[in-house]
Image (tube, rainbow, N blue to C red; front, top):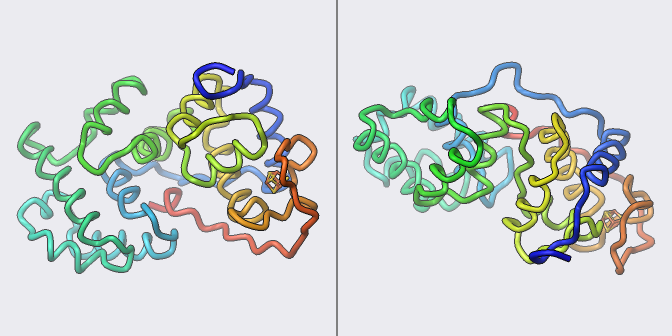
Length: 242
Ligand code: SF4
């Protein structure tokens, strides 16, 4: 053990990724990557809701405000109405507006394109310094917009990695550090997406379907169940469709 997590090895992640691909395939990616600010806004909208609702909210926002600088002069309540379908409208509208105003005031341009030339650590530090932006959101910008090899950690990725026993971490941010210190080249998107699929289908928060789970043979979860069941796969992933 070191710093709350086990010595996770590169080869552990390669093996896990292979088993997941065997079951779920190689996940499709956007044919074109969106700009980093669009991705940041999409990721803020996706917090604590499902992909379909956040996709509707994102599309509503783009239809109403075709350029992000239009949000700077828009009342928070107006933004909230447009994105209400994603839930937490007030909180998300405030976070989005703050980012837009910060960019306008500090850089004179409502864009995050200046991040393109920076390394991962610098991008993460810059983004998490913004109100309402955490490590998961910042790392999604790196993966889904800037095409960096990184594995963002949401609740699904955190739960599955800890149940499997590859990580012993008390919080998603610690799981993120453990994975990304040893992430093999080129598998960030596959591993992230397929761990979410695993968490949504077999390794659900309660009553995991361990008997039919594709990674059962390497999983060290002490409370494995003998449950199996019909898997309903939801292939739509918001951040690959922005
Ligand atoms: S075997 Fe069970 S606990 Fe382990 S990853 Fe699969 S569903 Fe989750």
